[in-house]
Image (cartoon, rainbow, N blue to C red):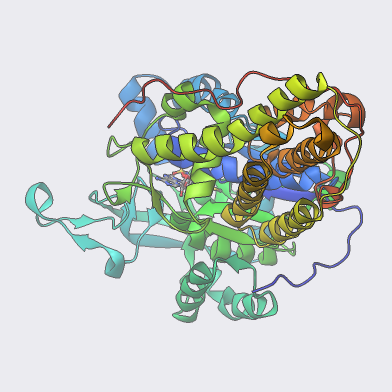
Length: 531
Ligand code: MSP
């Protein structure tokens, strides 16, 4: 479904978030997948010249992190400091992510505002005291409904299991405070109706609609059997339930309660990217919290699928998590970023295999794209001394370039990241076919066809310029190299200044630009690990 136009807000930045990650363990490629997706989306919007803000961070309170710290024999604060600094922040560099901010839920800029937020809702009568009895999954940090649990077998016979983690749930019986979530069912349904693309993809929207239509229960928002959390402002025997602390990161990082100017520029968030397992928190509880506080709900919640191993969600608890480094050490960060978004339709589940990764690396990146760039730069070197011939028209490539840009732009507006990449890669195929059909190495043998050779070389270089701009959000390192080897850096300025919406306008590289042969964009991989 096409997006309705958002209300015009000239001062509004395009604000995208990832989920904030639990720091019970180190990141695996499932986490990196969402972070890369958000990075591609925001780099794309930056490439349009928009004001953009990209937020990621870590979710540090709650029972799960506390248990991990206990098992590690350190305090939860020491544990989270160690994991955030040693694992979660460094992974952003491993996968080449350009986030604007990184929020930790243990930071004061967050904890103080969370207390204010809930105190306000408490004072407004949105919170009441009660008691919770029922199942809780620590791995999800979620109060479960008895109907959604599985019956355990084997070692777990007689126990109820979480359907996501396959692990026994705890039975809680606690005196807690509750948020009147059940009051928000009709308001939420009206909101979903008025904003048909609020939850995407469609399957996620349907899931949310039927969940809310089936009736909402009030939500327990505090815990009193452990103390690793933000103290409840009106009753310090409780800490806030980790989810209603965590969701507020999107607002506290944006300056809620501290920096009204920044908050006005960023709010509401344009896209919350979330895994499909945390959809209800974002599409039901979060907008209800915001409505209760009189704040605008986000514009979109987009649920991505899971990376699977053996048909199940990859996870550290099941020892199936692959650290991103293991892949980037072999293929590099660009190929990592390309592979997952290219191979899996965004919103669906997908599997990772070394074989598929290697095959696509070779066929699509090295043979199609890398080889095209290397052929062109070598030929300009060999036949024209590294000087780009004068501008020339080549309607086949020019028209296909305009189509590729339009298709990719439209895909990005739907957050169809695979569609955008495919539009660029289809164009690479067109350009490769053009080079093969025109056989410049044959034309070069015939002096009388010098003008033809000039046209072919110029047009191929110009087409590669388009490719560099289109793929820059996905593969920033290779595209920067390509851009400068085409002489575009010197002639047109840094690639970051090249507007994606103008990329399809033919004839931007000037004749005489210095074309240089660079290192291969995607070097041959000698050996790939298996398993
Ligand atoms: N801390 C909460 C989110 C709070 S947001 C206010 C959380 N953390 S998590 O670390 O468990 O998961 C974070 C994200 O990683 C979720 O979107 C989850 O779907 C995603 N993934 C975890 N494993 C994944 C895969 N195997 N595949 C794809 N995404 C995965 O939930």
